[in-house]
Amino acid sequence: MELGESLRLAADELRKLKMSCPTSSADVATWSRRASETIVRLENAHSRIRMPEQVWHYVHDADLRIKDSEYRKTQDEVLEGIIASFERGIVPESTGVTYRVRLQSIVVAALTVTAICIWFLLR
Image 1 (cartoon, rainbow, N blue to C red):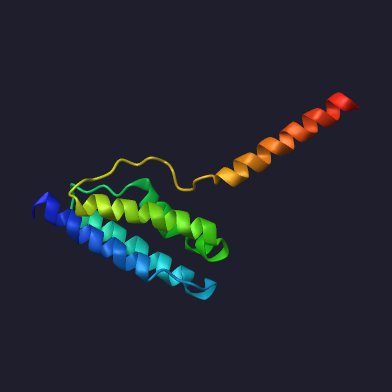
Image 2 (cartoon, one colour; image 1 turned 90 degrees about the vertical axis):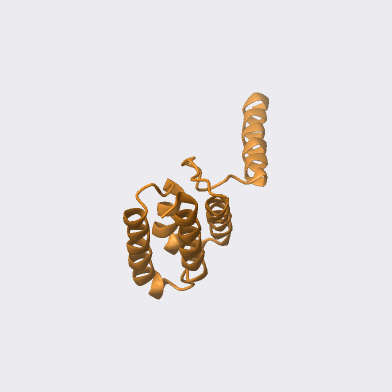
């Protein structure tokens, strides 16, 4: 099988995993097991495809996505990017990025540090 066809099949499987992702804690263990089996099966069937690290994070972080909607959104976006790359015939490199820090969080942290520094200076 040609690499492009293998990548399109992998993209379809990843999209199915994303759509079937659990929304309650009770379903996480079963979904994670099936998702892991799917990824291993894809890698074995299509030896030229090595899933990016973020795919494995997606599989193992289902419980976190249930608890944190921002984390769910970020992981869904990362997985959609991988799926889009596969559909274009590209195997993306692992970036190690699985969670992006929101600008608001950075601003709050910077203001907190600034306030603490000013407090120490004015004591």
